[in-house]
Length: 300
Ligand code: AVJ
Image 1 (cartoon, rainbow, N blue to C red):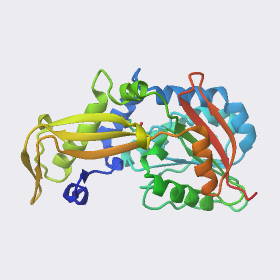
Image 2: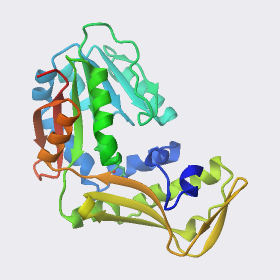
Image 3: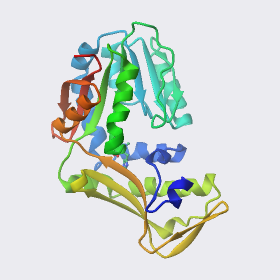
């Protein structure tokens, strides 16, 4: 975080959103009327759970990246009947609570939770030889990677899955700027709180002295780059102390906190192919807002 604050332009990586408070705020975002992503993806997984399960087959090892509260996987578990479910998330307490709840709800299912930062390194815990590994990466978190990193990240997943594996991934579609703008500027201001929580977190954990009222949430669609950008803009010229360090802000200067890339169906298929996947199926919701791709890791 300090490295990003020292940089010009200033930035904080979006993975830092998810402390206990941030994870809670993100849950609330997912239930907001403007945040269509969760509803659209839930519709897709619900409608196509049978078909998805038939493609995968029973007895797989199901690995979820950024599992959060493990809500969406519930739509698949009954039909899919995996041998084990491996939720992975950066938000430790949130992950453990979700995993315990799920394990109690599905007594027949083996659940192994792993706290990881998947943007750094992605290793699989022990997997019996011959079992089919399926990675589940919903929510369009893939959109947080920069174009140059996306293929490398997916290629690493393909390698980890080996020849008989597959990736089930949620990808937000490109769409009109108004719908996108509303989704990241909700009327209740929850997304603003989620964004500002980064500064509150620095205050809590790093002896920061940010005055939250001196910063303002900013989110907009950068259409040429196909991404939502989130920033925290300084409302005044100021210097903020974090621990022993001082950071100067010009009035209007921003900390860039998130990019959320959006993809066309074919655009994402091309990316998947570059990473060594075979795009076998893709579904979208009834409003054409969101997509879920089934990508085979096997060789041609
Ligand atoms: C978790 C990265 C998919 O980009 O839509 C929600 C995070 N940021 N509102 C997204 C987020 C602001 C979310 N992802």
